[in-house]
Every structure is written in structure tokens, then in C-alpha cells.
Image 1 (cartoon, rainbow, N blue to C red):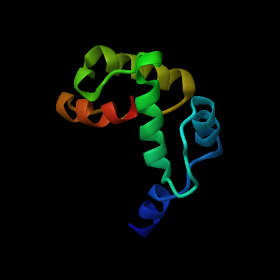
Image 2: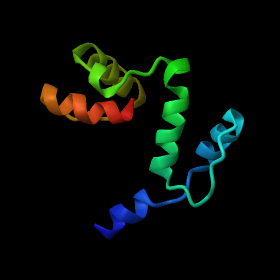
Image 3: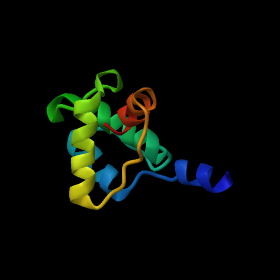
Length: 91
């Protein structure tokens, strides 16, 4: 549990800071990495055509599976209700 909290409270990654600076987003070292990721996602949602959690269905899940296959990542099998809620956070 403590390990999970430490991971969630880590400072933003170097990549997150680089992207934030390029977008003009003031991102401090005290900002937890998941918060930084969420802020960047909000700014990039429209330009990158990212979907909202409510828009995540079977078609989007197939795209996620395809991406996972091409990048050697694993996507867990989930029922549609859980899939929509969990995967929306990634997009």
C-alpha cells in the first residue's frame, strides 16, 4: 500500500515537464505525476482526438488492443462496464 502511494505521489516525469513547458503549462515539482498526466490530457484531448471515458466502447477497446499488441503491452480482459470506466482514464 505504501509503495503504491509513493508511486502516485512522485514528482512529474522529465517528459511531463518537457511537454508542459512546450504547452505553457506551469507544472511544479510538487505536482504528483498522475495529476500532471491528467492536466496534460485535458490540454491535449482535443488536438489529439482523445475520447472521454463515456465514449469508450468496443471499437475503442479494439484500438487499445491493437496498440498493445504493437507495443508489447498487455491489456486485461474486462467486462464492458469495467472496461469503459478503467480504460477511459488511460485515454
